[in-house]
Every structure is written in C-alpha cells, then in structure tokens.
Image (cartoon, rainbow, N blue to C red; front, side, top):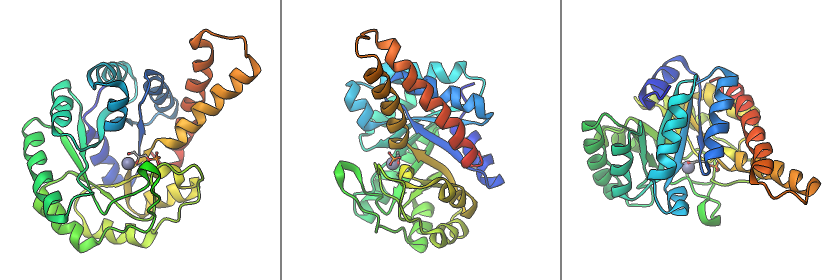
Length: 276
Ligand code: G3H
Ligand code: ZN
C-alpha cells in the first residue's frame, strides 16, 4: 500500500535498519522496484527526481502512475520527490499526494539554505509531508566527482534545529552517478553525525558503494539509502544483451521486460544488503 515516508523511515531509524530509496524514470522502474520489495518482504521508497521530471516535461503523468503502482503494492511503499530545487514542483508533489520531498538547496550558502529550507518545511508540514534536505553538497551530477565533501556534525545540528527538517542528506564520501563501486565511505563521520543529530540520515550517490560498505553504512547510522545509477546499469545491460541476441525484435515489451526483471532481482538483493 501507499505508505507515508515518515512511517517507513522513522521505524527503520529507530530499529537501526536501512530503507532502500530507488529512482523511477520510466514506469517499468516503478513496477520493478515494487516487485523487488515484495520479493524481499521489505518497505521501499520510489523517488522521482527533478531531472526525471525535466525529462518527461511534467511531474503529473509519471507521478500519478508511480502513486498507482505504490497503492497496488503489497509492500509498504512511499513516493518521494528527489533533488527538487523548484518550489512549484515541491507544491505539485504535495498536491499529488507524495509522502515526502527532498528540497535540495545544497549549492546555496549556509544562510540561504537554512532560510529557504525552513520555508519549505513550514509549507510541507502543514500538508503532512515529510521533508529531506541536504547539507554539505554530495557532488557528482553533471560529471563532477566530489567525493571530498563532508558534512560537519555541529553545523548539521544547528541546520536541523533551525530548519526543522525531518531527515538529512549528508556528505560522507559518496558521489553521484558512479559507475564503479569503489567509493570510500567515512564510517566514523556517519557515527558522529548519527550521535549528533535527532533525525534519520540519508546516503546519496550510493551506487558507488560496494555491498559490504552499504551494510556497514546502515549499521554505522545511515537510514535512507538512495540508489539510482546502479539500477539503471542493471536495466540497460539486460536490455542491451537482449537486443544483441535478438536484433530483429521491435516490440518494446520484449526488450524492456528483461530490463525490468533485472532491476527487480537487484532490488530484492539490495534490500537484504541494506538490512531493510
Ligand atoms: O538521489 C539519488 C541518489 O543519490 C542516487 O545516486 O545514482 O549515484 O546512485 P546514484
Ligand atoms: Zn542524490
């Protein structure tokens, strides 16, 4: 069933478990993510990024389809807006019935980040929507690899206090859109942030983190773990293999099905790795 993000992330944080948050670009992603969660018997978060909305040209069609897939799921399933910088998009997600939004002001100065995030929190809270924000930019989008960024625990605490955010994305050594799984995660910093902060922590750019370190990150104090690129890779490799073996096929269902199946299998596996 469609489940509020707070009802998935809160209990997981309290129990020291991870929550898999995976990105939806096509409808097949949403179907695969839910199939994987049902197979693992774990909750899941389906997230749509502002970039994916730009690709489609609008939030509503893919957003409503994703909400429908979540409602039909037997696994607790939340729908989240990921990396939003556009306030009108945040408002649209709230109106459509998303359980949470990530408002990303991480490229702003500390003061501007605090001010604009606090406004978003005020508005979303009134609608019962959970807000994630980011402090200490996790780089890697647009080809910028920034594994050196770190979130300072003391600054993070005043950030959480002054914005009222429900969950915090922190920079601990990962970087977005990595194709190899060799990021070096700062586990000591995760523990310090966990001890310092009253809200669940979110790991972005988790595609670059090997299995064993995903588990270790969760046990060190990470709760929501965002994985996108790694699943796109699984999807695309399966489609490429199928098309290479069947070059005469033109029915899109024939070659998207193996992509969807590959993502479902990998999600079921990752949810175990995340102790979800
Ligand atoms: O917000 C989404 C994520 O941080 C995913 O990053 O594509 O590197 O796994 P990734
Ligand atoms: Zn991210």
